[in-house]
Image (cartoon, rainbow, N blue to C red; front, side, top):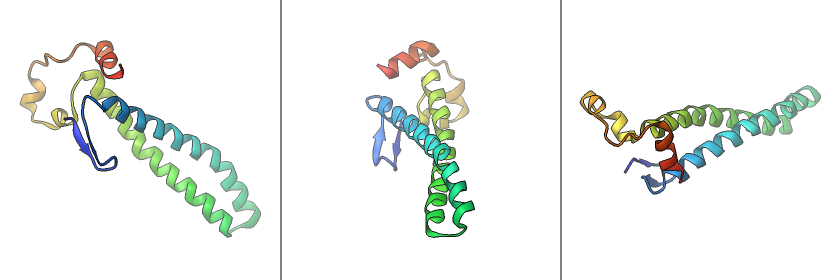
Amino acid sequence: MDHHCPWFNNCVSFTNYKSFLLTITYSTLLAIFTLLTTIPGALKAWFSCGLCFETLQVNGLVVCSAITSVSLGVLVPIHIDFVLRNVTTLENMGSTVLREADDSFNLGRKRNFVQVSL
């Protein structure tokens, strides 16, 4: 087991790690896309009607997509690093003795990535 993800209400393990990684990656890309495409509409709504209902809706979407982009944007590179080093979240959080021990599961960055992505 890698870790229990409360957002997915599921334990992330080797069997579903690829799905977990793809989900957070695609969610990050969608949040960034949403942010970039709604900013012009938010500015247009703000300058055309000031503080009206449409402005609040669009600005709320901008804020939500910005928060999602930042939070998942931090999470994705961390998990890609875990894949490339072939460690789990729990192993990474473990003591320094575990981190300094010889890692016999590390196959190299490319083979580690292929192992998870197949």
